[in-house]
Length: 304
Image (cartoon, rainbow, N blue to C red; front, side, top):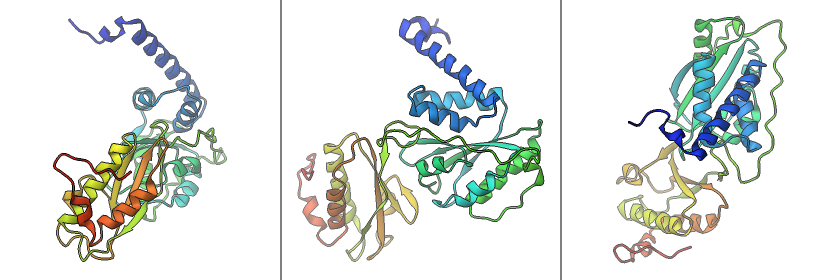
């Protein structure tokens, strides 16, 4: 009968598990010496001491099970890209350790120490309706009440609200912690999901009278062609700050109008063809969309 240990029967799996256990022990030592888990993990990823698939299991084992941080799962209410106030405020909270786990629209996962501006730079933005898990530990003693207050304060700051700061968040015996800088990763890396670069968001202005079904089909054909040429790259679509997972679900008749802007973003290694993609998407959002529909059933346009 298959058991929990069945996967360890092979030498490769056993050695992989052993390396993971050693890494977890090393991380526990770092956290016990007053290091923030997000700082530790991002540094280990940058130096190839840890792989992306290990990150969430480490968070579960170390932060939730061993050190019993309070946590909450939070749906981000609106896209945010300015984190200066959050960094400035949380850096004062010397009585608290805080770790954020952000699940991006394109499947990347970012571990963020909110006191560390470099982590925010990597994430670039927190997109509306995406999942953010907030972990907080009161360092003086066990105190779930203060931890939950801090979680609410972080959520309110992310929502753009002014917050009341409990004086218990600050340990007068400690100076504001100097954040541990993350080692510079190669240019192709973004977040903890590996070597995935992420472009800025590019605006495509709709020049058709409406972005109707023909424009929708043109965009689908264009993106299909791009993916056929660059299967390792992901294309994300945004409208009014929201991530659009299904073009058909948003671009219904009359919803996207003339002069509205639709945004796209590319993620992956060795990003190419962005300017061409932008050009074709602009054409697809114009009265000239029909040129992209002249392709046989089951055929893919050869645009890139």
